[in-house]
Length: 294
Image (cartoon, rainbow, N blue to C red; front, side, top):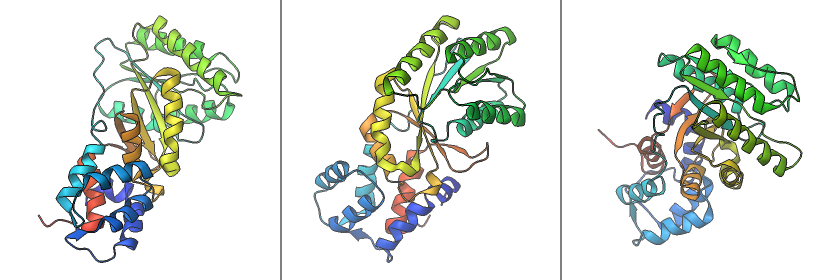
């Protein structure tokens, strides 16, 4: 089993194994329904999968085909931006793991030999500014920040201008996850997007939504709200290793038709794994049917 599967699906695999302790070549529709619901696949999607599996005794290959079909958008990667720097705007509710994920993305770019600058655009919370500053110090990357309550659009503008002046390849900007009302949050995010484009035409090139895997399928409504506010280009799911709700990945991908770019499976900067739908599905299938012999 792949290291990503071991870390990211361990609790989900344990929950499935409790339902199907004895591995076999086929499973019934009733067994499959129990497995998918236990793993937090949304009920409507479970019904679709069951309806498209005509036979009652379902084989690994038959189920693999259906599960992969629900992830048809999830394997996509975002197009490269030829007009450097590439500006990534990180959005999501507080507590989803935005700040830690920014550090992981920064480490990813550093590993690729790219220079990174961070923007502490969550000026709604002083703790968010402090936490991101600590990560910047740890990774030894520059950060543009201001005091709590300062205009986050100004922080975004200054971060991009600094990156352009210094020839940096990557800009990653944090944003607030919750203001007094959703309308305020939406207006703030839209303003940041406009100001990014003024600082650097076409920016932000990537608006990435961070979803907490422990919320399971309930994160779908949250994702739809952010998508309606500013449009989301891709998703990163955090804390998947801490939940038995791994099946929610199918629901999220199917409902949103957006790429799932990475999975977070730990707290350290290196614990960000590029999402691979084949490994993910095979990990679920191994829990149901047993690992395939090579």
